[in-house]
Image (cartoon, rainbow, N blue to C red; front, side, top):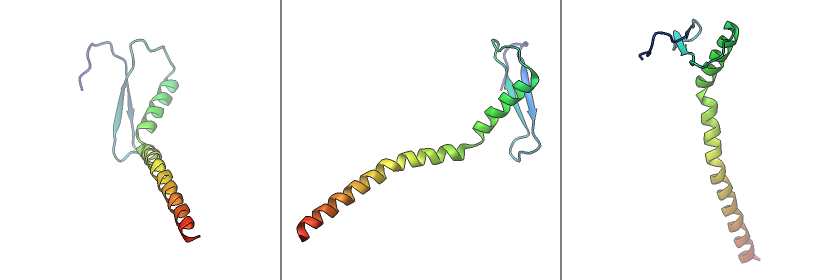
Amino acid sequence: MLLKGCYKRMICLHSTSSRLFGEAFFVLREDAPDMREQDMLAEANRILEESLLPGRRRKRRLLSALLPFLYGALAASLVWFICLMIVIL
């Protein structure tokens, strides 16, 4: 990755707890307000946590994809049950 310009502000986070990543680099926007170092680190950690938890997103997608299928299966089962009850009675 190449950075354009020589006045970019950048944050480098060194991690010793991750077995996948050693460092993460964040380039601050040019129009970013001046912030304390703690606020910038908190925001960088929030972004990292969001990007490193894909399992929750997959479960939500899978569940939202399965719900219409399950509702359809339930509706078809009810229709068959009603038809069988009419034929038997």
